[in-house]
Amino acid sequence: MSNAADTPVLSARGLRKEYGKGEGLVRAVDGVDLDVSAGETVAIMGPSGCGKSTLLHLLGGLDRPSGGEVRLNDRRIDNISEKALARMRRTDVSYVFQSFHLMEELTAVENVELSALLAGRPPRAARRRAEELLKQVGLAGRARFLPSALSGGQRQRVAVARALSNEPLVVLADEPTGNLDSAATLDVLQLFKDLRDSGQTLIMVTHDARIAATADRKFSMRDGALMDETWPTGGTTGQLGTLVRLED
Ligand SMILES: Nc1ncnc2c1ncn2[C@@H]1O[C@H](COP(=O)(O)OP(=O)(O)OP(=O)(O)O)[C@@H](O)[C@H]1O
Image (cartoon, rainbow, N blue to C red; front, side, top):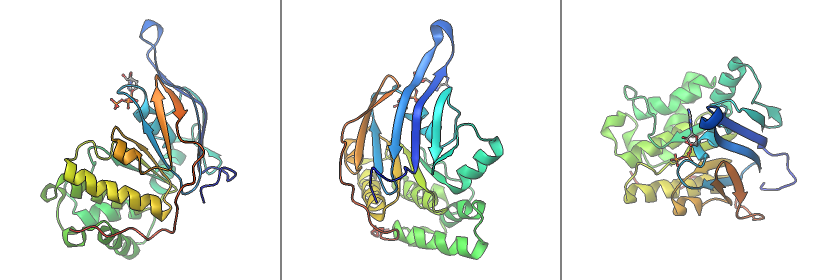
């Protein structure tokens, strides 16, 4: 599946994002070109403030660029209507954030099924998929727990299950282990290896070299520009549904 000749699932051309003006102008993303193929996992590393989160937001349609193009499955998403963008965010891309962003008043299984429901799945199918995904991330026994009753690592595993529940084209992860202790980091690290092996297209921003090492390709970012450090590689991809079970 990781084939440079494929039409990329996600691509960017001349992507720019500027904040402020005059002497206060910040070029957060400064002319990024990127092609990500189906099944590829990509890691972006770089110093604080170099533009990693801004780039991820532009790639996932959470923010609009100042210039350049973003294409998802060969369709421009940088200039589409707010309504089309909102639909695309519900169905085609998913996010895993450093601070989890779970709904605190919903149980683990409700958090996971919600994004499947928003993507248009019927309620029973959404619940079935949510339960299956929680099992795959090793949290079958915690499905009815509120996030406040889960550890940081367990919350992030719920967030990863949620990110998969709408079967997105691309998962975008922003510092997925940034808030975790080392034991929880190892659990989430295993989960990201499983994601890679399952053939899920994934772009992650991380300071953690161990997480970056799970990716097929690594980029480093400096002052808004992206440098490919590992091209070409042979990515390991497989079939969806092969997530290895973690212990509860
Ligand atoms: N809303 C905003 N308004 C003004 N400047 C911003 C805004 N968002 C980001 N920036 C600036 O853009 C640059 C890139 O920020 P970004 O958050 O993308 O960096 P980062 O590489 O993700 O940093 P970190 O690793 O610390 O999270 C920084 O100089 C930041 O101050």
